[in-house]
Image (cartoon, rainbow, N blue to C red):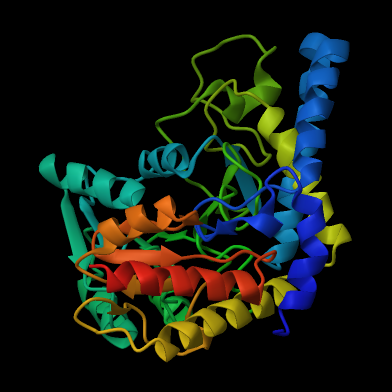
Length: 394
């Protein structure tokens, strides 16, 4: 029995609907199981909607505040603003619309970004904007390249804290943030794979001026439609793509010809009406995490232990590197919450594993094994054994 089994076994009974104790769920970096309290949150919303009808929004906003409080605590960020939206792409588009791309048509990013950002910026390039895709594999070189590319035509820098394909941590993020601040260029950080995995103190790392995309679908276990854009309290950006929820407090005021206004609250980059059931579900999960003592430090230790164990199990099998090998060889301290393996047969392996009841996923030639806090060493052993059997048949 491994050290992380104690926590995993204590959590498993609380995930009975997803039956995590009897399934090999290794898509924790993409979709984790929801604890049973999430179902209670959905039922609570249905009752609130029935009882309060159109006055339900006040209660819904209270649930969103639970999520904001969780994130402010996680990021050691008491003064940051957190705008809620359905997904990170909507938030990114709103943020992009606030940039002066007419006079500053250059955006610096990396080759390792998730599809939402990568696809959107490639489309911007087709429209004539100067999108610079820097290699992301070497952190020192990336830092040097960002500094070299920063100029008076640069509208923004957009990159990840943890890369979605390989689980590699961008170890030079504070230095990149400092360089962008000195240049007066906004920095947008995609932290979908960082939240609840690798702790981050915005204050200690000097990131108060940064914008951070956060998603609840993965490691937070909040499910869909619980995404946030963290932005500084003194943010002066005025998004051109803007919905009426960005100025909810002024709806009853007479219309005039004054510039479009934004509330002082957290919803500057918001759109419009949404289904608040997701916030009820997520708030129940956030409270559950706190009740179970799943602090940033506890979660980091759990993931590090699990990924280390998966690495060791993989190494012990002596796989042929021509068939499958590590996509991430960094120290565990520079690795996020999943094991990334490279293989020309990644998609075939993923499909065959699924036939064997092992949930993983593949992106190109990389297959990913993502544990969750409730994953035991025995389940890790079963997954790697199944992998061995599948690779042997290739």
